[in-house]
Length: 249
Image (tube, rainbow, N blue to C red; front, side, top):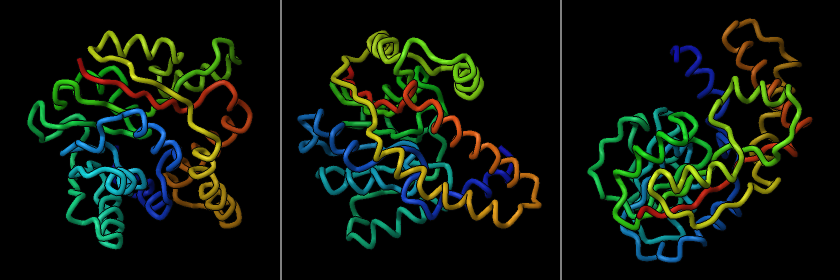
């Protein structure tokens, strides 16, 4: 990804609470499916962004949280948040790629990833990240999924071009088993999770319309965001982010 586009993404998202769909309600619901979480020592949050869910994990468990993201500016915001809440000793930030994680095998009690596993791919993430989990450790990931077997062809084409691994929830659950996990549970993201993500974006889009953009990279990025908003408004009943909770065998 070229540096100019990266900086555009950082500037657009760094002041938003979340860089992807999600909400504390969903984070807590997923965590509630992991009954042993209060005993955990080490949790890895992959693709943490500015750390909305990282903060929740730190407050609701006793574990040391290792927060990973590729963008230093997002990690800076997370560090500020952790310090403000007095959790700086519980959250260690790491600037690194999710496909080259510098951690020992069989180390983590739980791996968490909200709205980020698509960067590496769901199947690859399950297989690769699983090596870092202890036996019987947990992996929790939210992943874009079809919620209907029948949908408009335009929507199918859109998502297949954006993320070919999108699939039905039932097929994702089968893949979880095929990758060596025991499915614990799954649920779709509530509307509040999308609102948290899109409401700040809509305001930014409105500002961009009021103040035309001359920079070609920023203009192209904004057009992509607008397309995404339109797709969601028209077709949201056909897809959603789904939290998948699984345990390593």
